[in-house]
Amino acid sequence: MSVFADKPVHQPGPPRTYVRREGRLTDGQKRALSELLPQFTYPEDGRAPGEVFGREAPRVLEIGFGNGESLAAQAGKHRDQDFIGLEVHRPGVGYLLQAVEADKLSNVRVSSSDALLFLDQALPQASIDRVQVFFPDPWPKKRHHKRRIVRPDALDKIARVMKPGAVLALATDWDNYAEQMMEVLSAHPAFENCHGDAQFAPRAERIVTRFERRAHRLGHTIHDLAFSRR
Ligand SMILES: C[S@@+](CC[C@H](N)C(=O)[O-])C[C@H]1O[C@@H](n2cnc3c(N)ncnc32)[C@H](O)[C@@H]1O
Image 1 (tube, rainbow, N blue to C red):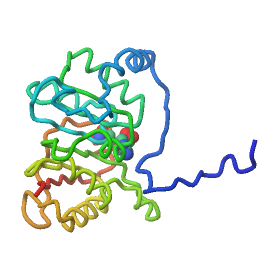
Image 2 (image 1 turned 135 degrees about the horizontal axis):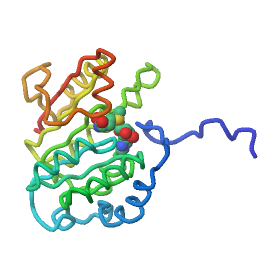
Image 3 (image 1 turned 90 degrees about the vertical axis):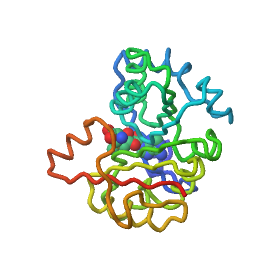
Image 4 (image 1 turned 90 degrees about the horizontal axis):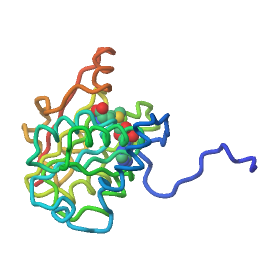
């Protein structure tokens, strides 16, 4: 084995927004990944979303859905809308797929690809009606702030797939990330604050997930933001 084996490998390109942590898969998640993932994976072959879902309906994209509790609840409530969920953490993907099966959510497709690649490869320009990024990894250390997903290069990719007037909804429990989101989004030419300059948004529709419960326990304030695509 190389003496450099445990040194981080230099990755060319923009900083990764996540750390791949495989975590333990339950038997149910393993089964869901092997049996359901092929059927519910959003294809990356450039197919039109209408063809993927077999209909034209409002489309919601959620980036980093965690275990998908919130996404599954929303998709169950709004069966007249289609949902594309992106999450690199495979146990989370397995968890959501179990809910997709149990609640017969034919309006959900998922991908375990890096969202920043998926956005470029899988989705046509102006094809999404709403994008949600709830509690993205906060990367609290200053030297890691460049890994935060709300940053100009990622916003360019998100903006490309949004229809004009589509809304990007975000939430975070890190004050300093909320400020960064406000700054970067306000400066981005493709976005306009739905609630006026520098204003935070009312709570978006979402159930309280594990991450939000933890934030409450820690006494953190939750900030929501909503920006529309110009
Ligand atoms: C802190 S968790 C929040 C999960 C969920 N939104 C919630 O509120 O419970 C952030 C999630 O984003 C995922 N993530 C981070 N970067 C990603 C990327 N580039 N593509 C897909 N998922 C990503 C992580 O794996 C993690 O599960």
